[in-house]
Image (cartoon, rainbow, N blue to C red):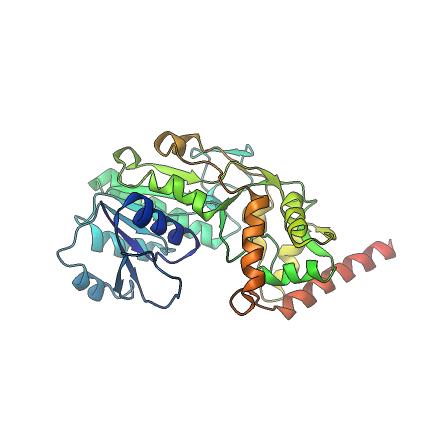
Length: 341
């Protein structure tokens, strides 16, 4: 079996590539610019190209055919239109990586299935993913273009932690606040439900769809089975660090308003995604990928990640003093408001 990945070195795709090339013995090709330094699995072939240079890519894949093409870095309709032109007639399956944030927020039910409506007025990223899905499914219905849609939720690996309230430079400043004994902002009252997924577990579900004719024309979300509150997620991280968690709960609407005025926007990632309870029903994908299960529960995954992050400071510890100061201002303002009432 032969697969081509557009990307292939990211959090999710790298785990899929390792499983395919290692345990499953696929012939794996990547198209990317060769800029990311993650070590590739032995035997993985790379086509160095910018996928946006359509003519160059077309020339480099001339005469090649694939069992599955996987698009991990397609975010807008023009990009999947380009893929359609490049790979029509060259693949038996085209897997598009969408997002579970495309589901309506809030949905009518906190149990989310693939039949849950797609709509997200709070996040342009999600609306673009929905538009990409609609274009591809139209090509499937009208021409038989062999598309499969996959909607990941919050997937992580040893390089970063899955958090909700963080700045533009990522999770490290939140960890640093925990280590320094400072309060950490958690959206809402911390009781909303969520699922985080270690990338190796995601790969178990994803590879079961590859080359599977029953996946053509279908959409699947893939998450771990473990359901946690956001307080539990943050507490698990604090436990792994060996520190006390000082949780400071703040309304998601408030955070969206005050973050937008300070150069980073939390409306999409909170109001449009993580502030709403969501429990993803994986029964559909498990019918085709029976190996999918949680092998890395979060209390284990958090320790894997922190062990790596703490031992690789230059790679993973990106200070974000602006976000740190913003957290202090938000907390000070709310404490002053409490004192004035």
